[in-house]
Amino acid sequence: MELWLQAARVAAAANLALLLALGSVWLRNYRSHGASHTLGLLVFAGFLAVENALWLYFYVLHDDFVGWFLASGTDVQVGVTFLCGLELAALLFLVRVTWR
Amino acid sequence: MEGVLWYLLASSRGGETRARILRAIDERPRNANQLADDLGFDYTTIRHHMDVLMENNVVEKSGDEYAAVYLLTDQVRANWETAEEVLDAVESDAEGE
Image (cartoon, rainbow over all chains, first blue to last red; front, side, top):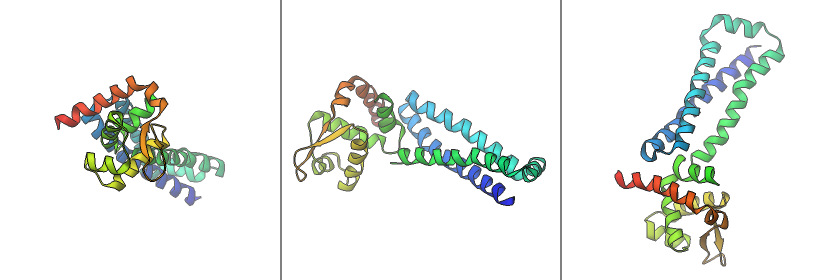
């Protein structure tokens, strides 16, 4: 079903945007304070950003992957969508405590 | 508590402001108006940061609602060495800018 593919694309794109926003705060703080705690968050954001960029590539540009996704059962489509969807929920909590 | 202090003071957006507030309260307890005057911030800015610090059990209010001053919590006092370490990290660069 096309709907789950769209949801997965939106979630991966939103994750990437949130990670860039979080990363910008952490990068600024790391450059001014140099705390290893902040560096840890920065590395975390960096790897998750790469992960989501990869998801986005598969969801949007990779025809074979999209074909496999659309040919799969609902369990696979929902499950794979949840990989990015649940991460989005987690990142929103992190944004909430970082942005204040 | 250690992670909380690093996050609140060194890794989030309002960290530097909260570090200055915490330093001021460590010097002597103050209310929101005094903090706003002494540090040169809006009253609403101070209130925002005080809410964040209270939610995380870093400061607490004492006295009646109107003149309530903020104090460090026992939890922060017990971890004051860590707090100093975080404050030093945040302050050393604030001066260098």
